[in-house]
Length: 476
Image (cartoon, rainbow, N blue to C red):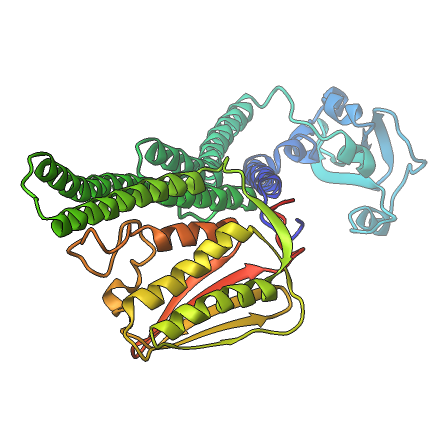
């Protein structure tokens, strides 16, 4: 996960960014404060330590307290540059100077370890003298302070400090705002989108999806949320389709039951009232009653079978059998029926044993239903071909004919319950549940059933997994 933008990395990056910006802000403000202080206080201390500031005609009254506080001292030189007076603790052994020695004191060299200041003045008796100040440079650097005497400068310093603090608070506030907006963009906004998505799902708007850019964890939540919404939307559509299908089924069942029962009722009343007197007509009426009653029985049985197949608790038991032998037996059974109706029936079945886990009775119903439909609805001379094809994991049972065909507009509806090619819903055209039941049976086997049509040719293809390739079946 090191290459993914997760929340942990985002928080670390934003915290580092926040800390750096605060640090940089403080450094910049300190630099500004230092610059301003230098502008105002650069020469405050030195002005109090210069010779011309403290020199007096009566040099015995020179105020040298500040100088001595820095371990410095004051020397008074006569016209011959001889030391005639010292105030403070003298730390060198120079009691006489030449002009060259004096000049050397002011050279900017590392060897010169003293800060020096020299000023000429007139003594009380009118003689020329010199005031020389010496302070160790190292000590000045270590003990540089602003004295309490500079009240105006302290006031200026406080003003600058206050301005700096206000500027810091302003920049800090801007930084916090930027940080908050950044975090909102990275985390808060995606979480708000997720909350809105949950509200949409709660309100039944399953079609809405989440679309935002965020970190790895939030993107995963988005993907799983969209997947959930997609499944809920599909479930809702399936539920509506199922309700519509059930409603349609009830309508069809009531229609398909009402028509033959009405016919039976009419003939029974006619027989009871003695309206049919000829024996041949009575037998015809009894035949019609029997046919309609049988149709009602088949319809009820098919509806019951379909409801069982749609139940997840249906006890579906399979057994590993030779599918090649199974197709041979059905083909041999229908061969005579096709011959009687002058069909050309051909089949191609592999000679070797092919084991498939299936329910013999139910799969027989699927194949026989397709063959019976081909026999019932096609004219004489139709070619019917049955083949069994094997691959590594599946087998394919193909049943094709070149009869009347199935029009493309109704091709997609042949597996729907109560659908017949004849939309007038004739009561003698079967129950309309044969292919629906066949589809459920094949799917219970873990397979698929397909219908292919091409220029009048009709081909049903049943695909089933070979034994050992479908763990969802109940083995006997």
